[in-house]
Length: 294
Image (cartoon, rainbow, N blue to C red; front, side, top):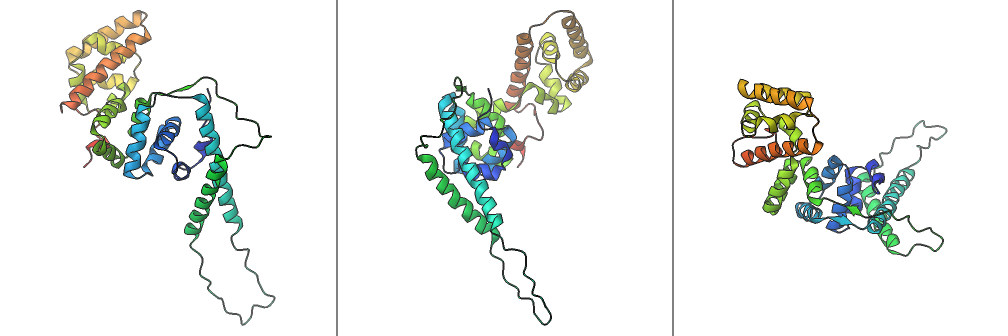
């Protein structure tokens, strides 16, 4: 199913923030959940602290969105985006024409005419255009205008997973704000920010502690399709005896057919072990985690 908000990927995070500013937190949350996490994180960073909390809280609770509602949201934002682009185009076209040159410039003195505040003028025009676009989008579409094609089925959303992925790309300031305003929610989201592959960010002593707390078979299944760099880092981090046991299990599993589900379950067990140890202050999954920066 195509992303109904793909057209926003060509916009800057500031523009997306402007066209979403007068929408509800749930509306913004649904839209951010359809954007690439790094772009959504940039849009979130443009919001004030209270709005950041409201949007993340609403997004975290989202389970699904009716297809016709998402389609209507998409049409509305497209209209607002086109209005912003048109206003910017008009602004540039209204700039002063090329300087007029008299036939004889001798004896004429240059006159310094102060330039208007271009940024303020541009922002005022954009705000005015957005206000007009909001009024237009609220009206009923003309009879001769075809209705938007409904998106088949509904849009299922794992709100917690989406919010966690966005926060993973967010700055420390945004994370700290959410943590201060909703500590319980943030703890849930923080656990979802990490994946098994993130263990490659860990220091060797942390990896040694984690893999010493799972069985060699679980470790081998978890590493079965892991990146070569993570595989090598784990083997070099654990004790020689445990490294041999993991290698033996890897060799044995290579000769057998293994279900993908078993591999995913093993990776989840290792990750859960790492998260518990991190919560207990025994290890750090990512030493450069923004949450750890004072």
